[in-house]
Length: 154
Ligand SMILES: CC(C)(COP(=O)(O)OP(=O)(O)OC[C@H]1O[C@@H](n2cnc3c(N)ncnc32)[C@H](O)[C@@H]1OP(=O)(O)O)[C@@H](O)C(=O)NCCC(=O)NCCS
Image (cartoon, rainbow, N blue to C red; front, side):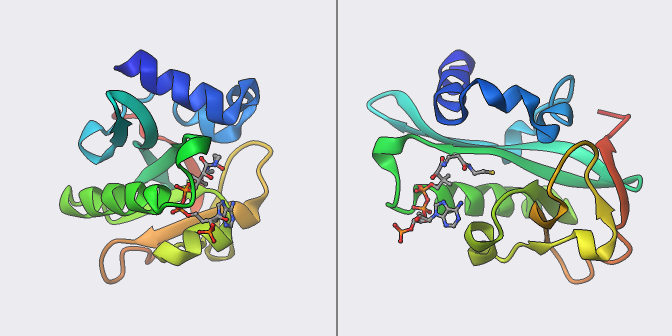
């Protein structure tokens, strides 16, 4: 199963994905399997949304990505459904907020807003305007600022 999901992610993002700063926060990290989702058609993965533990200035948050939907399955709401499932699972698991690097117009529909203005800094060469956050409870984003890094406890 893991190999089939990796194959989907490779197909959607291409080899360039390993150069992404987000990848640095996933390598050697431990997948939050209770907050990660895979969609299947005919036994094959056609969509996935994964979550990872990271910290912002030392405070633990869930980091979303990659989100990938097979080109043949797009514009049917699968991407949004996967994000919503992952967000709800993170809320249920007690995470205070979800962080990601992505397109504001797409993730804004689910409620994500820019986090850089509040002082959240992604390491590496990242367009900080694409750093987005969704608080999962009242005040979930309060005091969240500083550098994003892998949770040393992960
Ligand atoms: C982004 C992605 C996951 C969306 O999957 P999906 O199942 O088509 O998503 P939904 O059905 O929920 O939404 C589709 C709508 O979002 C729009 N959309 C897709 N990517 C977008 C983006 N980057 N910015 C703004 N809108 C976008 C589509 O145009 C589509 O609009 P339509 O319904 O009017 O046709 C999919 O296109 C994909 O895997 N892309 C490549 C990988 C990627 O960019 N992942 C996200 C980066 S973190």
